[in-house]
Length: 298
Image 1 (cartoon, rainbow, N blue to C red):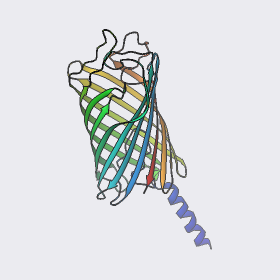
Image 2 (cartoon, rainbow, N blue to C red):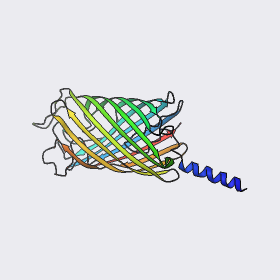
Image 3 (cartoon, rainbow, N blue to C red):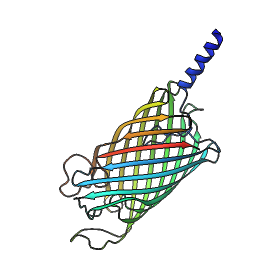
Image 4 (cartoon, rainbow, N blue to C red):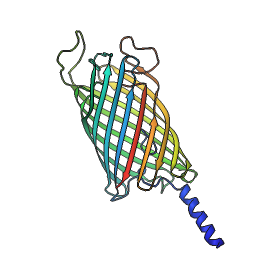
């Protein structure tokens, strides 16, 4: 009887200290983990992001991304995604970005394809390393909701490490994104409003890091930070921003959910006329971002 009790206690302790139940379980809202999805595994994710407040007027945008991930091998996974956008803007006009008030419910806005290749698994090695390659095409501008053709190519290095037998998890991403964009012409623009339709080329540098701690079985509490800076062909450094905030994650055997709040801490670059002096970048970014991610193991 004593041996059985000891075995049961050891099993419960191992379950509490083990890494997340799913290989590609997302502990963070913005930081990607390096752990690969096993061969033959299939998961579906829904990522819903609320972006709000540009300092003046009214601005709210909802981004929806529905992803399906499949493990081709134990090291290589393929991911396909469909995007949708809902937007509500009022009382704010910004040259080249917001031509006027606009409001509509969810509309299809883009498609994405990813390849995730794992070099070292954090669960099997002392350190996890993966590479994420993404190609995206969008036909709606995420800032104004107007028609705009955008092609993005992104390469991202994913790093991850377990501490305290998996109770504490650290992940970091370093990436570069190249963008080609072209706005569609708009009729009845405000007098003197600048809405360039020439093709644009941009390079964005991305750095993100997060730390998450399991405080109860299946529950993780953590924090993450996101740095972005964008360089445009004609103006050089166009914008930069630093965001950071808490994350809360729950994972069961068949599904998981993550909620994150990532307000803008500091930002700079281009400003719109009469922008409040808040030390933030509020043309392409907002003051607040909230994200809910849900994953289902099929």
